[in-house]
Image (tube, rainbow, N blue to C red; front, side, top):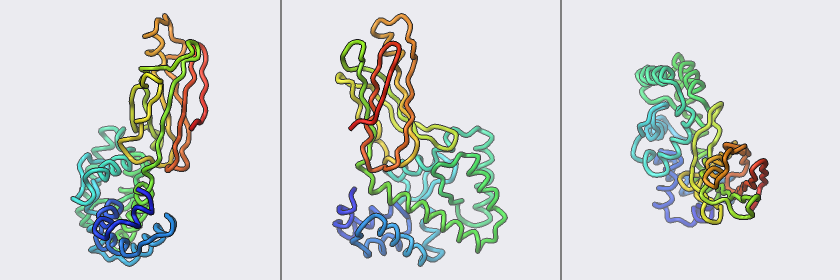
Length: 283
């Protein structure tokens, strides 16, 4: 969705879209009424201003739409379906590779937190490992409830800002193609995996197989693209062996790159030969 499209929606439709960013109905209605926004910066500034005027009931409503940290479950109705569930999963991707011990400690600390404060632990989890989230959770258990609600509200504000960016970043994508320079033809039927860095771990974003023209354009179709470090891994060994190579010098090729502008198109090709390869940012 573009900013112009959001500005042009009717009030009810705009509220539905904005609830994907923050589960407070009061926040969504006030944001819809604040349109049109001249820029995304103006929109996020308005989001911060409206957030500052919310009360405890509004924050609790927003908190209730999030899944628990480290849980595969989902939150309330306005934040748990469709792309919202995908957004939550992407935000908490650092927990996906956590050990069973860390997940058990997260579960216990979550129960203790909710019993103490009356709502689930809220943290802007994007880019954080499970261990980092656990450390933050345990560190906030002893907070005064009046202080903790303000901390949780500020974490919700950070999440909201990231989700506004995601809402308006639907044009961003990552594509690739493979050229077999030894044969002078496209590298068809090669498996490719796309991942994003989350702390010290990598989380899968998409995967697929190059078509007859050596191209693959569906790697980022299943979720909104966000800024960060990405890597493409090409199954060059499988491709070369399928074409009669007795030994593949490169069993796979990994290309790591940084996406700073998540609204842009990043085309990262692979030029492959049996004993060498190169890449570049294409278009």
